[in-house]
Length: 143
Image 1: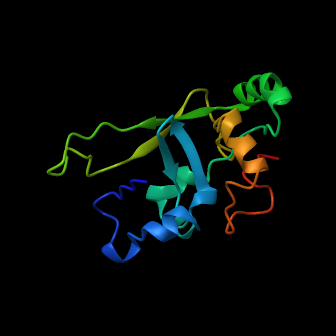
Image 2 (image 1 turned 90 degrees about the horizontal axis):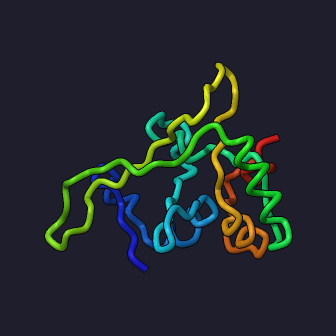
């Protein structure tokens, strides 16, 4: 497991064990070999509000994938996009890892921003792989 922290994250917060345990429940896979981990302790920092976006649906079985993809796609009004940053370390690894939420539909004031986490995320969530102890009771699903 390789874990990259943006260079602005203080050294004291660069704890691999915390990223692999406490923050794991706030993980959204964004690529076959890469995930975004949100730090639930940073919800008051406007730089990090993107990681508290919810999905408009959930999928807990392979039989529900088609329905999930339709419903989540209909409700989603944003998507997670990587921000391109050219700065790298001596081994070529990116030093600044940022993602943004980009609106894909008009978002009215007070409307919740919804993204699709993907069926694989929800199936792993159902198996207990992703659990965020600091999340609210709705487990990342919009009401």
